[in-house]
Length: 391
RNA sequence: GCGCCGGUGACGGAGUGGUCAAUCGUACUUGACUGUAAAUCAAGCGCCCAUCGGGCUACGCAGGUUCGAAUCCUGCCCGGCGCA
Image (tube, rainbow, N blue to C red):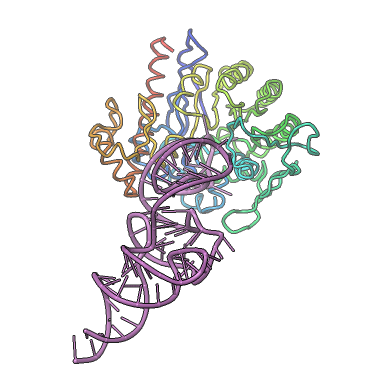
């Protein structure tokens, strides 16, 4: 059961203000969905994640399947109860791990294209014209077939098989409010031929996920793929939109420049049903947030605020701060002078810098809290701007 | 006082005649990170010029042996342990 209401449509952009109603409460959109892969926002308690303004979190099917296993979670009363999080939850399908533990890992590359890369992932034989990294079409640690994906667990080498049906079954056992179809996000260095073949597979899996669902209690989002190829993106949007999903995810990579992503979002969202919610998967540096909201994205998740916090990067209204840099040892100011979070209310940059350099765990926790607060607040202000007709 | 062992770059610690400006770890500096195998990873780290590279000074201090020494010898200084 998911109800999505659009309260206001911007006249200046494609942005919309909305409310997602789930069995565990409301989500005001646009909203950031902080990442809690293993049923925890790393370094924070559930209460802290809430205090940082988070309305909804996203956990991961693959990782929770490995540890502790969905049966444990179900026995403990489901994901919300297990993690002490009463608010709405999403689970990602495990599709991202097909990429991140597959070609992403093999080539040491995320989903954003590195312009200096000369490798490519191809469907058949190596290209005669381009410099190609010799490697069939299968990643080293997993095998992707029409039926699904066979992972070799990085924990113990055990074989883990995941496919559309199993992903849905696990996600039903976990019990999040919003769940995602099993898909394959393609690599930025995949050839068009590879992406096209992968897309057919992802589309087939989407349908299978719908069929696998035993109850409409959870909202199953279909995922649009197609990489950086506009025709494939459009084809995917049309295909996924034609299926009876209550909401949509937009996944994968969009090339190396942000303008391409914006364009791609525009044409994709023009096809997706307007009244249904759209979730952009895995995007969210601060500079991305307003552009994607302006393209009509309702929710988006990103590891950046939490992940970067553990590396000592604080986000502020004036940009990034590398808190561990020695210069901050003399800085009495808070991370961000206008931030109202608990970290900024109490601690100086000098103290946080010291904690980082001394490898105190509190450093990561304090910074994670700040970053999360900062991002959530930033998105809240964007909602306010839409409400006031300014965005 | 005698005996034994030892003194290596910011620190810990390899090396024990040429391939050593010196393995490695830490610290430090810089960079990366977008549905989290990530409290991670990469690069640099004596000084000077430099594109490849080259020059200089270095392994407690001072001498010596040798074509060549962080590595061998002598003396001194310092530390640990043992015996007086």
